Length: 484
Image 1: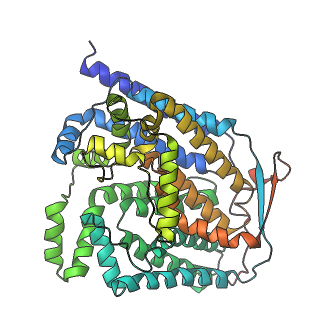
Image 2: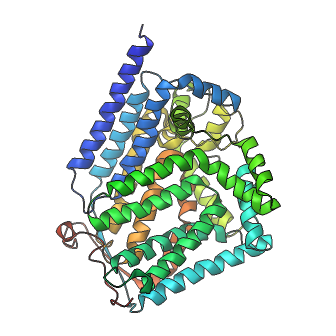
Image 3: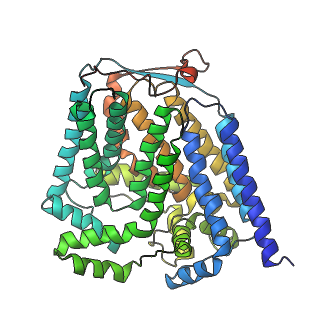
């Protein structure tokens, strides 16, 4: 019989070996920039399928207690748990590496000379949609209060004449922020930044993003959107800014521990106008911790769902009906396009999160997401891990190749690449295809209307690939004039 120390040692070694293997893959592979899609994927995978389960090994009893208090089942880690994570990662790598590269060249049919005007116009379009969306609530303040409080009460208030605009505003505000940041750092010179148009455009984009982020009231949205800025800055400097990274991840821990309580406090304050009462209401619902152990417990509580769902699918096998992947695909397409954008009511197939919620929470509407590997297990059990992760890797390779030779051609193309890279990587955490489509709906709609103005060439060989390997990325994006 394996004792607890031996069990922890075996699991710890397995996870450490997986972490070392991922680090080796990241170090040895050829890439065009310091941080690309696969780098982001590796980071997110390590958070949810390596670091989180390792932390849970030492606080399993507390996690069980917390889950029981919330009416949730917690499945204690088994000997095969890290092996499933290994299998999922290797299957993804197989799909990613064995998919043939097909390069694309994307260019505009016309040239834009006045970049500041372009960025300002783009921001004004987003701001206009934001104002239209607020009409459903009687103003911006009422809209922010409604969205924040609905996030913490579970009520769906995203209904109204202009409700579909919210699906466009969120991703477009992030793309605008990334593009403006690229434009700003690319055009830095000895001229004081306060005198540059690019700085004021970036400040306007940042302000718009923060308002949208606060209204969305999601710590994950804020963190991973701002994480994209670090990715862009690292690629611009062609090295990882470790001081900035340390400060950033310190901020992440603070956001995880204190973010929900403070966002809820601000929402209640805007609603009732009394800060003391707002703090009291928030503290009754969200506890604030300050010591290291509770911080780790809070981190694990919000990241262990992927492994917990994966184990639930294995342990409960035979007690549920396997769901093929097309259910999730149909559910995502129908819920976001005909229903989400056009308001057409159709019968939506049940996706994996509904089954996961029913098993773990006893309530199909709880919203307990399965994670990438968990969704694969609920679809085809263990073989589903290979098929699901392999197909996911192949899809990500196609996406990467589409942007492979274009990210140094336009600020907006690079901004879209970073935004979708983060969304695709977060599929590891959710396992819900709807989130990818919903999180990038504004980008898809914008690209659809831009198609007539784009020229796209493709090649199955490297003839179209530029020499960005030794030129670097971002630094060779088109410059605006020094006064911009």
